[in-house]
Length: 318
Image 1 (tube, rainbow, N blue to C red):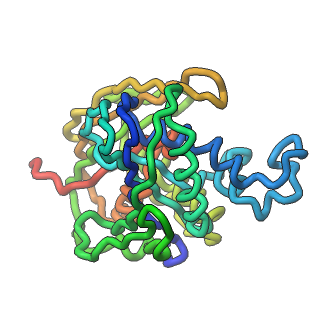
Image 2: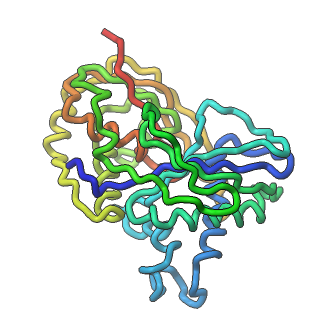
């Protein structure tokens, strides 16, 4: 189960506005959208193949490794773009202001961090949104696996050159003693959790612990097997049997609409989902390693755009 092979890194990208900007509320999603085209233009060495899947160079192509895993339904993409502060409702930025987002990379994708860095340098030259707002990449900071860690952050990029390799973390390093065996735990969904079960979107009153564990363990398996090259051997049947005894006792979940425009598909896409708090009661001891990893990898649909981010806390409810 726990394995040092499940590697990931977290970096904060800090962008400096070179002109006044009016940006969408979900900045990480916007940046992810603009980034994809630039990343392909910088890394594609073969423009003759009809598709990346047919390209004879795809096994060594950064774009294929990072973006083209969607052809297999059981493979998760190896990155997440996420806002640093989900309570930040700011949209207007003046020249010189800083815009930050967090990038998480998994397994083999970590070695491609320089490709992300130089792609954002080029994206700054090309500009954001239809107005082509210009920015510069001011710095990239390697972040700690846990917000409670006392380890110093490391500067990976200083605005002109790459200074060091990213700090890599493993599943083992984030599963510590912060959470003793618990019977009550609270989930705080910071970005929309979008679940579909039986081809229907899960509504606030329908979310169960079983749904969370099922989605989470599938995502762990997908990332581990394809990007970290190992099988975590999760016993799904046993876990799901236990989840039936874990019940929600209090919920403040609500639905949050979120629509984004995809230039690739030339269409609006619905990314809305559940946000807020929910408290579960039951024997949670065996689930803690998975739940703590879930704080890093997100759950549900559209996780690569920052959806499904949650934090855990020990509930005081009785």
